[in-house]
Image (cartoon, rainbow, N blue to C red; front, side, top):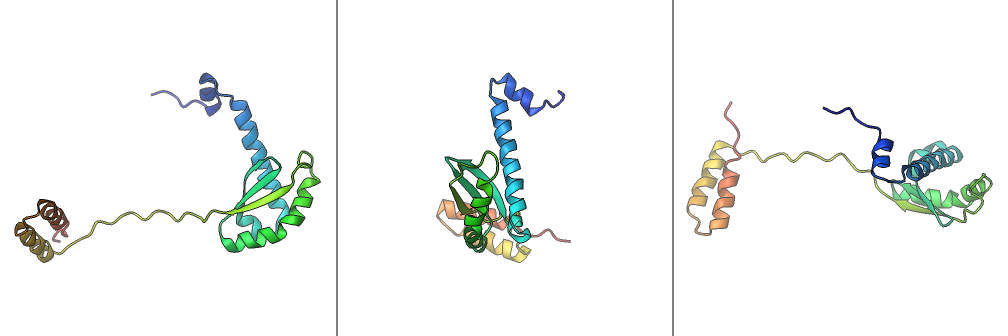
Amino acid sequence: MDKPSPITKLLHRANFPAEGVLQRGQFLHRLNRLVGSLLDTDSKLHCQVGNIRDGVLILYVDSTAWASRLRYQSPALLKQLQQRKGLATLRQIEVKVTPKQEKEKKNQAAELSNEASSCLSACADSISDLGLREALQRLATRHRKSV
């Protein structure tokens, strides 16, 4: 098995300008830390720098409540950021809501008792519609294993 290669080597082999992408990522990471240092402790836990383009800083928050709070704070934040080197051309802060993703719950297969499974099988046998019959038969196979 081959040893994993650093992403920069893979991108370089593919003639992809990795330096620009890496520099951009590092810049956004530093900007995220800077924004976090300028916000109060509660706000920075719910805020993430998304992008900066054409003088507009895009911040993502995890709820509408935090979006409202950050929009209220954004004029003061904008002034503080404009005083930093390289951010003087910043003219606007846009706040967008992206709710936190809950961990996906695994689909649990329906479990039927043996009696329910037998009933579904009998019902399926009496149905003339082929699609419905097959669906009921598949459902009937989801019975609990006897302990």
